[in-house]
Length: 472
Image 1 (cartoon, rainbow, N blue to C red):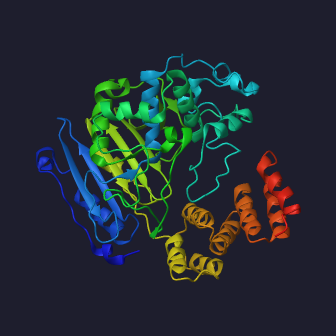
Image 2: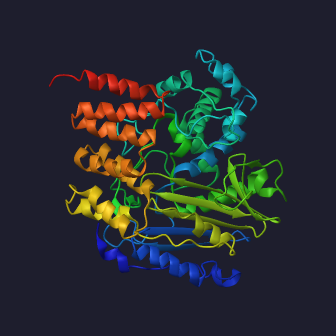
Image 3: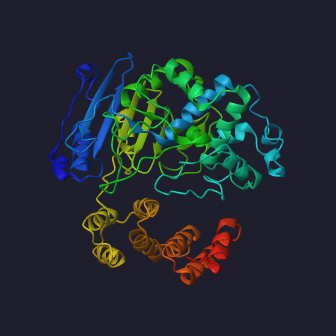
């Protein structure tokens, strides 16, 4: 990656801020500059919507190699912010009652569990289904939703089971199912349904099919300071995370929500669903009708949603008390929620993310030093470098997807070192050993994964394959 951007820090903003006060405080400005310099966020695009309907835009860093400053039309993958669009479509186009069960909508699928799941359950993440189905096994883990289809969704529905003890559980699969229900109900496809909503919300720059990588306004994705891959959502996975947008359009989207969504217009929100999360404090995070709700104090309700793909993060938020709205987009896996919250709620405490071990490992890989990644990891851990296994996980998935199995196998060793009791980690280890044709060792790893998750049929399938691999 071109390091010249480390010292690039350019800020454009509208004179509107002088009228309503400095929305980007000196403290926040300094924190953003620090993240840009450390490559934690190669670029940041921020849009702020003021109570009088005027907007201001702030842009930092570079969104493409060559010191290219982003602007309000720079496109980023927005990931799960897309779910708020899908929830909006449900309220506008769904021609069946939200209490309708999946069994009646997918009558050809023989799975009694579907009778226990309603569309309302799915919308509200209360169906008790996992984030991803047990059948989800991408061909390319560096671009995991590319190739997802209606036929795969039906297979997932046939084998779907629920956890009835769960009160609230976030699910990408749930919103993929909702997308398919919308299509069946309206006889329209994703482009038509979402296209209508984008038009209604005056989102002229956003796209529903990933543009060519050479598109001049498309930001490049990064993870741990190294270039990553774009995610191409296909099939109904697009309803969970497929929109590509910009700050200008998402500000228009928040205007649209203010004008049309009851949650944005109500004085106070009732019947909110507790998420059980303590990430923002005890009993402060709720959910309703497609939106997360942060209630930091009795009189303050912030409607928000975030999103993340392999190399992008996004945040949209609206403080109902102050009528201030914000959009924050970045071409990095590093979360930016705190920046968004700080802008709409000044008492929120900023985080200070650091360069983690994953950044140093990415540098080693970039320099071709891939044979001793585990040893490098241990050395950095001993020096108390900040650790982030999620970033290392996505680095491993990227190189595995790129078929660089020597590198991904080294990274899988690091995951095993830290999470040997995690079935997915052992499954990943087995995948790498299988691709390296180390079948006996792969079987051992898969057997450990199966012992940790006996219901995962794919693990048994890989064991059977490795027991009798094809002769080459």
